[in-house]
Length: 498
Image (cartoon, rainbow, N blue to C red; front, top):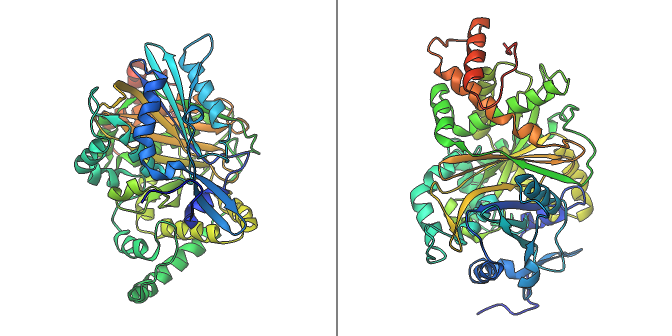
């Protein structure tokens, strides 16, 4: 039986927490952009949204927050408002597209309507560009990947709306789960087994007496992890931690071959995610050095989302993930040592219950009075400087309403006083790196984006040096510098860090 306009259903408590995190300084939207190789007419896009996007009933509902709790209310979406045509202005450059995405990422959605919107740039180069904004209370990143996959096909000719997600899950699903940041099964399997039963998708306790013994066994681990998280010190003051302005800026890098990153991982016996986060740490270090800051000995933290449900359940939408605090050793000048420290930190987090603690806390915040959420959120947001997330996508070209997706990127929201977001997305054999930043924290996120690829190149060419052994010597560093100078995409400063 279909829902009727005006009908309400309670919102899950974790989703309620994300709804209430909204602030003028940090809009709780997931923002994405697709660059299409061919032109996409607005009428065709609206038909696609009506047929496939609105096939998810949740997107026909608006979020209603009241003192008694939050609800989903059935409405009739107005596609003329939800799917709009926009123009870039006199130029159709990438800089103009970044400026438009930045403006939209800074603007809130209309809470009188369902909290999602598509903006189509019909003329961008030889094709079009599509910008999507969806509020975090609807779903997490993994679930939204499934939503976007449902809009696409593997050929210009349209197929069944759920054929691609099924194929992707069958072919890539197991590997995707392992590639998610921190979401390795090792150390999590037992905890996930009972968490999936203790918490439903709203984070509410399920009535299952048989869980008592399991919860008692895990309870001590959870209590210790909670105490450890609360005891974490605030992140140190740096140029990336400042009062927020509510004005966001976005930037993204050109695609990087995934095979290059895998080669680095094989050389140093670590994961793709370790390599990417180590490169991000190196980029932040290089940025600080170029700004005249001394990062030596400095460590900052990133909050990293961890998937807490089987990937095949992603289509159910909602938020079902936890957060962990990962140390980024930007004070380490040796790129290999930096990678080793990131990898060690990820291994430690995979064996912890930190993600489960965060998930439980989000559920508790969603159940508690709204007045308590802001101070609790601020307490935890002070412990990190950036949000870092990785969403893996299909390793094959996709088509949206017959137009090939040439490039794709997304940005996740930051919460509390955090003003920097790092996003990594893999698609069709390449990796994309993007940054969203509050203007007060980083006025030009391109400055961080352009330093990411050189950090990967450092690790790649150091791995290829046949005489590479142990710590970086002055001779090895000089050989590395000369080789990079000849082959890197950007010049290497003299006096390589040792």
